[in-house]
Structure formats: C-alpha cells, structure tokens
Length: 200
Image (cartoon, rainbow, N blue to C red; front, side, top):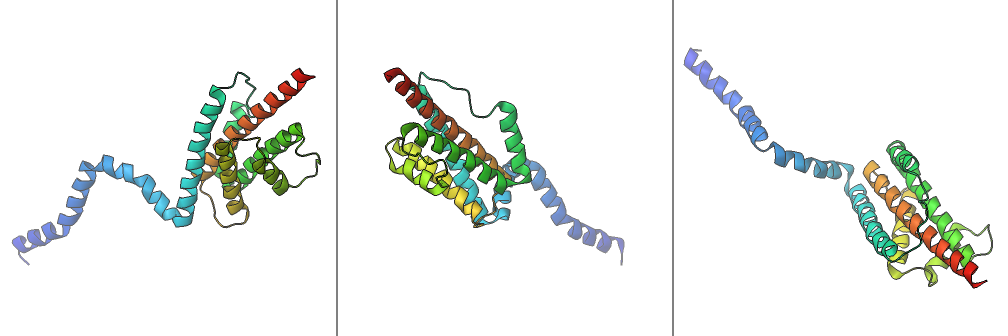
C-alpha cells in the first residue's frame, strides 16, 4: 500500500466522525434542548403521558390557587413549611410512587376536615372513597376545584394500582399540586369555621 492510498483510506474512515463532531459543536444548543424529550421517550409512553398529566395538574392548581386566593381576605399558614416541602420533593426522588400516595393522603385529610366542618361527614372512620365522593358531589367546591381534585384522585389511583410507575419529575409535580389543593381546602375550611363562629 502506498502513501496516497493510506491517506485516502484514513480520510474516508475519519470523515463521518469529523462531520458528526462538527455538527454537534455547531448545533449543541438545539441538541441540549432536545435532551428532556429524549428522556421522556426513554421512560415509555405511559410514564410520559402520566408526567404530562401531573404537570397539567400542577399548572391547573397554580391557576386555581391564584384565582381562589385573589378573592380571599382570610390567609392561613400553609400546611407545609418550606423545609417540609423541600423534604417531600427530595423524598419523591427516592420513592416517587410512595410520595404520590402520601400527597393524596394529605388531600384526603383536608377533604375530610372540610366535610366535617360542614356536617357532610360525621363518622371519623369514613373511608377515603366515600369522603371523596361526598365532597365532590356537594356544592362545597367550585367546578374547577372539583375537576382538580378528581384529576389528583385519578392520578393517585393509577399509581396505587400499579398501572404506571411515575418518574421523579411527575411525583414532584404531583406533590406540589397536592400541596396547593390542600392549602385551598384548608382556607375553605377556615372560612366556613369563621362564618359559623360569627353567626353564633
């Protein structure tokens, strides 16, 4: 093999890797923007769909919370302190499914307290499903709030019945959405308690 053939073969074998390297350097910003989508595709269609639904629940909870608190003069302390909220989000990394179920337990407790305040629920041993149904079928919450609670309930059921294995991001979005719903339910319960106390 002569030198010219050797150089020709070397150029042939190095051409594609060089082109790919140059394209990677030139389009690195666009490629880095695509990486989150590749992670979602890797997780699978069910997990990606669940993640999008959890993100939508968070967006809906933020909108509803803003609307709800805008007209409210009564402010109460949030159900979780900053450190607790951070611990929950970190906990979602270790056990995303467990954090979703635990977050729903908080929503369920807030629903129970609201139902108890209004006299809709009197038995402290009432099961979760009947508490949920009682509140959702009543006129205590707006239609948007009912839809949000139903979204969270359905997402929780999909995790609890092992229909989906949530990602860390989905669990964190769910926990944040549930925290906002709990806060709204607690404010509603406090409003009703203050109205009841002032009417006595």
